Length: 155
Image (cartoon, rainbow, N blue to C red; front, side, top):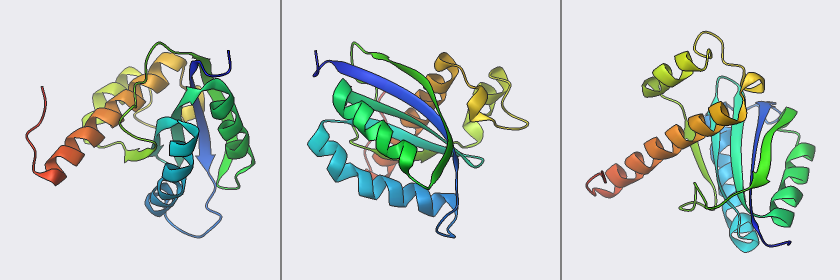
């Protein structure tokens, strides 16, 4: 069935083709993706950390796979590796057609648990570890958004 919910998680190295820092690249990619992803019914989160991107894409399988094919051709990404690709029961990143996040110090315990604190290498992440990092980054992004709006934190 073409429209079933599908989640794909990948990692790639950031290729600095525009001479900008990774923060600027993250914002540029997110800004360009929001409208296209909304039209394709794709949601997700793009995490940037230590020269790597880790991203979750959720939506209809055909749309997610087409988007992943475009990412594979994007000069800003190199060493693209799909970590997991499978149907999903629900969206984990339903609040965003695309959001960008960076890992802060609060992620250190998780990075230590994953053996990734000394030298981050997203290519070594397994599906559970990659999704755990993305969920952690998504929760931090939600808290930041609520703070920016002056709203109380949920739970």
